[in-house]
Length: 334
Ligand code: TRP
Image 1: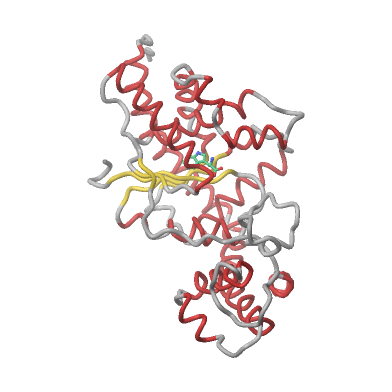
Image 2 (image 1 turned 180 degrees about the vertical axis):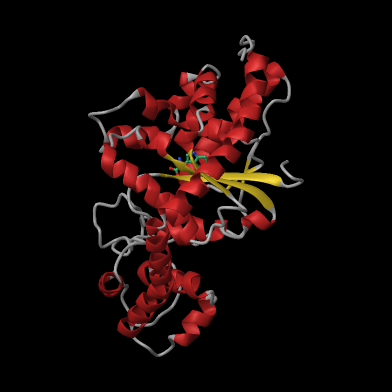
């Protein structure tokens, strides 16, 4: 508990360009959580170097993600938005927790297997212990809730296992986090292959709408989106392409799927796709303007970064001090 509120923790990796799927599925739903929870959202740059990064590009990506959090509506005063690498307690607790995690557990992580297959020239130990660092992120802030997608559920499970193991040895040190499944975000699929989720690492750039895509690019991608046989705009299992577009339309407008279906009754796929593109642009264009404005305002952004770093450090160090004591490290004398 912080200020009488339960704590919620999440974050995104600081690499690649965010997609409409990241926004509608996660970011958009984070915006109002601070009313009920004390929220921390990290720019997960320590995790990013498990894959080789080009330094200048990486630096820019991390700052862009930070600005995008704010442009998407996260209030940087009511939420703690910060860079993971600015709070050294993450790396320190990550090391300690490595010593409380079994290789047998890590061997079961499906994301490690996937990433190792994809980056077979660089299967480093960091990629292997990625979930332990993620456990450190969550446990440092004594988080009660973690909104995560399906692909991260296994990592949340191991976080709970590590925390329970640590607590059973040393007493109640960590809050055991749960997944947050409140108002669940939209599940947006690739425009080119709706059996896959829309992803920032998709090799086919036509499958994803990026948050920084220009308006005419969005129109082009929506027009090219795969649709299904037939010509009715209906949500159904045998119409994955159309259903995905309906999902996007509904999430961008706030209208229900049923309302959207009614609206397009008797209208063809062509007209529908253009309407989808228009509603996507109505969301993206103002966000992009705000993003650009923030990046120009270096003083403001730097001030926010400094304040939030301090806030994050305060809470993280509180937990780290407790952990150090429990483990039996000698005091640091000043
Ligand atoms: N692994 C997460 C992802 O790729 C990002 C992440 C790192 C995270 N640490 C976290 C998410 C802690 C939630 C909580 O999506």
